[in-house]
Image (cartoon, rainbow, N blue to C red; front, side):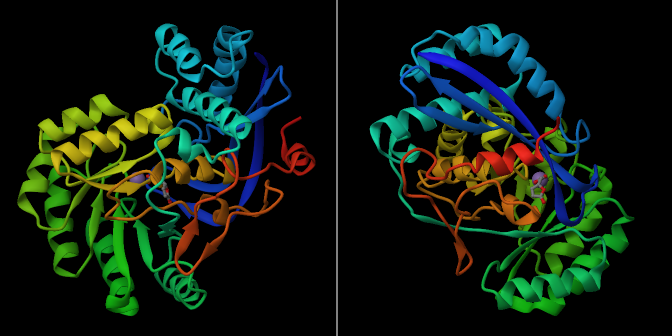
Length: 369
Ligand SMILES: O=C(O)C[C@H]1C=CC(=O)O1
Ligand SMILES: [Mn+2]
């Protein structure tokens, strides 16, 4: 039986300022959910988002208050082992709140997989890979700093895929910044850009032409999420793949984007999809439509990153790898044993449930009082 649900908000400083077109982050607020069951088993989930309300329509505070006030009461007393039934109840009466739903589904599946002594991926059909390629985001705002950071990641054999955050400066300046980095790093790396919706369609036509010419491998969400027409025209016009990120909020969007031929690649995120099963449905739609996959992040800490890894490990195709580097952007560890990154890969945890264990005293020390 589901006995207790608790939401923790922890403000963790980042290792450096992280500049996106919608926000500059110097701390990340981890939103963690613990579900305790009557049989003594507990599970954890994460609903972390980016930039308060700058990126999406759920903030850390709204997620906590909505779970505490509206969602937890629906779940308390239900059979903890019937995860699908519990989530069906929540989905029937709660509109939106995808991040909260994802965290709760994660926690329930973590608990059930621990009970069964299997990795969470086993409850999702089983994994087809045990490690995932991991991109790093260069977003210091300074070209030379970004190049030095990338070189050190290459030397440490941690990352060889780099995503550059652009869209804040004029198009010509952003293009010069990206191409300087691409020239400095050469063909041994993959350089990609994320515009976070900042460009008009005209900006995008100019910017993408230059980036494609300069050898950039992927263009993420160049224009507004709701402008599927522009996404489709850009995808048809350019050879460099166009990736949907903010436009993708679960299977219905995946279907609409596929129907509109509005993306070549999907950035699948478990929170944006509304849960682990729904993220798998997004992948199924992509597979049916011939769209490639990329495992995205909302810069979650270790719990959300482990949950994402469990899901992405089940994807048959993952042509563009993942960006599951969230914990590496944070100055504080919340796990007893950190996730393992080596040889440009994240090892998908193999133990029961999420395969990671929270260090509760450490987390509590970081939590808002
Ligand atoms: O993809 C986004 O828009 C959000 C996020 C993912 C990596 C990163 O640096 O920011
Ligand atoms: Mn993005």
